Length: 119
Image 1 (cartoon, rainbow, N blue to C red):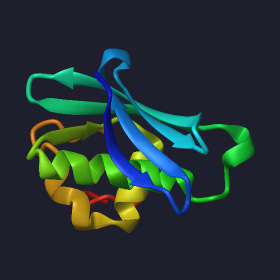
Image 2 (cartoon, rainbow, N blue to C red):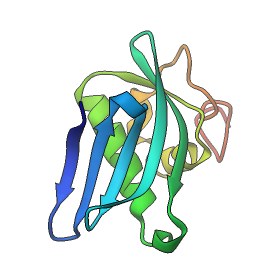
Image 3 (cartoon, rainbow, N blue to C red):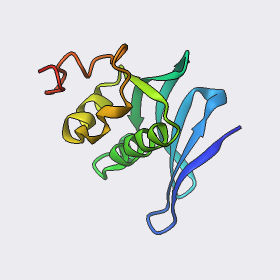
Image 4 (cartoon, rainbow, N blue to C red):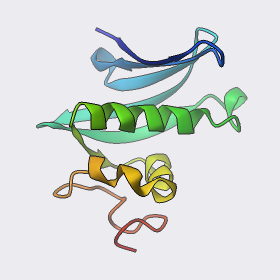
């Protein structure tokens, strides 16, 4: 069952976890305009691919989606493995989310992608 993680009525932006589809969905004005796919492996989420509709790019919507996902994982005390370049790039600018990354299975972020901690 889908769970609303973020709802900003002023910006008309909503982020929903859709576990049946293995993705987080980003809605603007009620229309789905973006997704961040994931897999559940043991107790962690493997973040796969972030996509925002071409007509909505350049508005910072992927940043909202990624931040909401990382905040939710932190709140649930759930770890993540990053295989999404957009998430890795976000992490280089917001290293405050380093605690969300599974140190045993960090994915591409720890490999120094975009200046991650191992760079």
